[in-house]
Length: 275
Image (cartoon, rainbow, N blue to C red):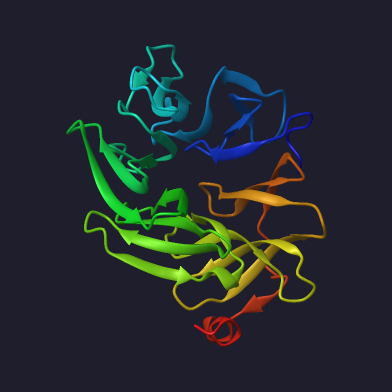
């Protein structure tokens, strides 16, 4: 079901109760009902919203404060309270994701010619570097597991394409799940913590698909495929049955079908991609 029109949507995320989604478009952050209706502009200058677990605040990427950087992470109180600035140093801070315990926000930060994942703790008031990626690579779309002990993210190497990593919290130990040749990108956790939703290529015809993938060994389930039209920014709903995706620029909500479009075991993936 298409729930927006007339906006080029990006960075959508479900509210904790599953009744609404926040997204950014045209430089601002909007909230729209999960069944459609007119979007409400809640932040005039912001991108990449992420909802707090209690549903009353949004962390987002906004203009730099006094740091002299290009962007900072802010917290917006939906009840009308003051804006809270989280990051305060020169650099590019983006892609925040709120932990399920409500105490932490993970984000990517580019500073001193390196990009890394950082975790901010509200209770401690501290920023901790979790991992660093080699120079020349991009790191984006971190997402906390439901148990808050792992974070999945996308790494993108120049001229190679994206690969998918897990990093343990707080140890920082990393594990590569998929290499660049797999074609997967933009991973997000299912509420069960047992699988991911991603964008990938269908093995027949190369169509763009929304993919559910059970960890660690499959199967793969293609939930929605499109020819030529871009599918981006997949997200599971809190009920684990619905999912959202940006389909040709429009925010769309779908219900997971019980009959998969195609399935693919982990063994077949390893044989196909030389893992």
